Each structure stands twice: as structure tokens, then as C-alpha cells.
Image 1 (tube, rainbow, N blue to C red):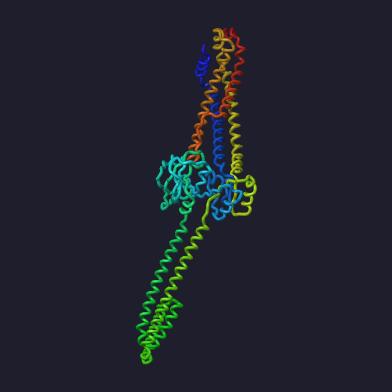
Image 2: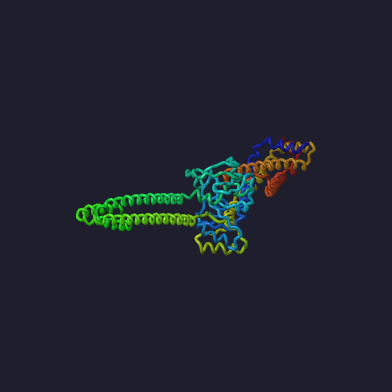
Length: 517
């Protein structure tokens, strides 16, 4: 007689007897397996992503936020720091590598990160196709980004200001071009669009562009004024030349006008004054003006022309000199204003972990955070919750075992006549015990498998949420060693419940049971 098949038929003949036990077992197993996988994968992801970074330097604020935003890219940055203040840290003797990163834009929710090629080396990134960026607005796409958005080599797109996918501030005048796609690495590289630092600076350099346009406009205005000044001088020169033919006094006044014009630049008003003066003086001194007209007119003409020419040249040189100074000052100001979001540092010496963070936090306007310490603190906070949930799941498991015990005990008492008949057909107590044991094990296996599948389904849902929110994906793996041990524990608890419920089999009085029937 096939005891396993008989146990299966007995179990499904009255399924309601086992429903409560099965549901409790499924709930317990799903909670335990889900929490185990979630905590293991999150810890593994964080440990893998913070491994290349010993210290993060950024703007003052929350050190945990600085680590989450600059290393794991799942939070908003604390602010920016001047590049000129971060550069001395790059040359510090304790520093092995220092990688500047800057960001503030996104494309469809995926961050656009500005950095240098050493960022790929830190995380072991390799190219699946294409090349690394060489120029501004050339971008290398992570594997997950390229797959999700369907990006290919040569594709162009424009970034949006901020880190939210629904941003309406689009940089239409600064398109990016995909020049490379990375292989999957299970690191932050998979979810980033990476370009050089200049791309980020140029995409947000609106103020400097406006300044440059103003300088160019002012330069054009100065040139225009210079031309007008030259025309006025030429016109006045002609006026003085003609008026000077009449009177010596007019020539003298014209000469004074040229000197005064050179000092005050007010050609029109003095020219008018000279004309008025000439009209009056001409009537009173015509004879004297006639006597010296030719010589003095020639002299006044030469002197005036010389003065105006020298004045125009001087004015032009002065304007050009001012414009060059403005351009140089604007360039220096732009260089001083360059900022980065943070600096990712790897140490040569472990002693730097003690000395450098304290020095930076106390003596600079920047903040130093240690990813290892901050993530350990975070997992410590989350760990208490994980332990609580695991404790609840294990409590449910023991309740499930007790429920199995109650259900089997009730089943055995309801089927005493069947068991007595089986004894008359030659089945001993040991085989009857096996029969009940098979029922309990079938229930335990069905509950564990159902609970494991439910836990993986919950993990998939959380993975989809994390991809949409943070860009991280959780892997759906097969059973690991901890889950196998949990399966063994489930079988042992179920087996113990079956053995306790089966003790009444050994006390079964066949003749009495059959007589009462």
C-alpha cells in the first residue's frame, strides 16, 4: 500500500481542516524569506558601492545624506563646494585617489553625473560598446539606463534641471550625445549617465554667458561711440576751418575749444559756443582778422587736427584696454566660481581615517563623512526593525507548528475508525505513524514552497519600486543557504507537531473502536 498517496488523499479530502495551519505557515515563511533577501541584498549593494570610497567631502549638512547622495545616489545633495577649496585635498599626501563629482540634472529620472574617467576604474566599469567621453556633452550610459530607455550609440537627448523626472526646466540648448554603453556591474554605474565635469558647469553657466554677452555689447557700444566721436571731431574741424577764415579771434577761440574739447569730450556744446562767439567777434575785429588770416588759420587747422587725432587714438586705446581687463576679470571670476558637489577620496594610509575628517570638519567650510561608518549606523537603525520582523515571523512559525499539531490531533480523532480498519488490514502502528507523518510533511512542504514564492513575489514588487524611485534593482535568486536551513527548521517543527499528535495512535483500541461503530 502506497502510504504517501494515501496521506495525500486524506489531506485533500478535508482541506478546511488544514487551511488555517497552511495560511499561518505561508505567512511565516514569506516574511522570513523576504526580510532575509531584502536585508542581504541591500547590505551587499551598499557594501559594494561604498568599497571604493573611504571619505566623502561635501557641503555642510547631514553626513548620512552626503553619503547617500554622493556615493549611493539615492538622496538630494547637501549643496556644492568651491573647486579651489577641494583641490588641496586632492594633493594631500594621505590621499591615494580623489574623484570630483558634480550633478544636478537628470534625464527621465536618471542622474547626469559629471566626473572624470577614474570614476569608472573605481567601480570596475567596462565598456560594452563605444568609448569614454572626450568632449563636453558626451555621455556614457550605464547598462540599466541604456536598457530601460533604449539608448544607443549616437543618440542625443537634453537634460532637465533637478533630480525629479517631471522637471520642466529643460536645457534645450545643451544636448548630450551617447558615445558609450557600459557592461552590467551591479553598482551605481548601472543607473547613471556619466559625462565630464565641464558638461555640468557649461549646462549651468547662464550667468557667465550673460556677462560675456554684456561685455561684447559694451565693447560694441564703445566702438560706436568712438566712431561718433571721430565724426564730431571731423565736423568741428571743418567748421573751425571755415569760420576761421574770417577772424583771428575766431581762430583763437577755436584753438581754446580744441583744448577744452580734449579734456571734457563735450564737442557739441563748445562747438555751438564757438560759433556764437565767432559771430560777435567777427564784426568787431574784421581788420585784424584779415591781416593774419592765412597763417593763423593754417596753424589752427593743423593744431586742431593733431589734437583730435591724438585724442581719438587715446580714447580708442583706453576703451580697448578696459574691455580686455573686463574679459580677463570675468574669466578669473568664472574660474573662481567653479563648484563640485563632492569629492570621493580613497586613502593610502588607514591613519588618515582618524586625522583628515576631523581636520576638515573643524578647519574648513566643508564636511567630511565616512561612508563605512554612516552605512553601518544606517544598517544598525534598520537592523532593529529587521530583527523585529524576523522575530514576529519566527513566532508565527511556531504558532503554525502548534496549529499543525491541533489540526492533526483533530484529524486523528475524527478518523479513529479508519485507522482501526487499516490495523485490521495488516498495517502496524509504525506504518500508521508514517501515514500521519506524511500528511504533516506534505503540509509543511506545501506551506514552505508557497511562502517562498510569495516572498519572492514581494521582493519583485519592492525591486520595481526601488527601480522607479532610486534606480536600484534587486535580484531574484534561488534559495540560498539561510533559506535551506529555514526549510529544515520548518520540517522539524512540523515533524515535532506530528509526533505529538500521533501519540494517540499507540493507544488505539481496535476492538472497542470497531464495536462502537
